[in-house]
Length: 163
Image 1 (tube, rainbow, N blue to C red):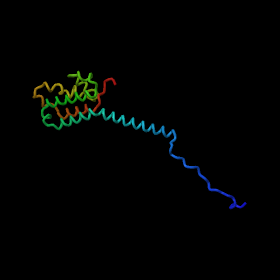
Image 2: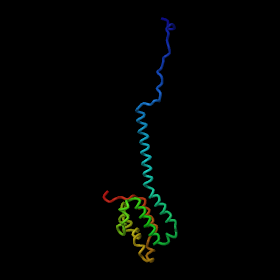
Image 3: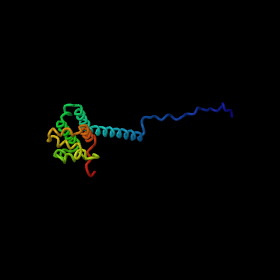
Image 4: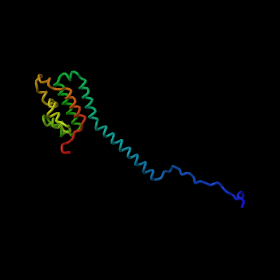
């Protein structure tokens, strides 16, 4: 048999598989990825909104630190810091848990979640005592330390006792 007399044809390859329409498995993967992406974006947005009060309080604290008039008058400073803490804690915790706290109970509340009792037994105690004391006791308060513990209280979340 003569090889040239045989009618040979070129090999035909199967046609390429199109990417469209996609298989159902790919649709499921796409839906899962889009859902996961929306969940991540939603959680990030929630976290951003949760920290809105913290960011505003830190900006207010920074303006207090930069205001020399307030810093020079310790009574005005303690009053302003107390107002700042009260408003910030009202944003963190339900109103009925914070609004009626005064005196030592307020300072104990501020100490929740901190390593030490900075407010009830430390420098923060002046927040409730200073408005009622005479001006002679001004010099024994460390303003920088007071501002630092207020900043720390704003930065750290409130941790309930027993949790």
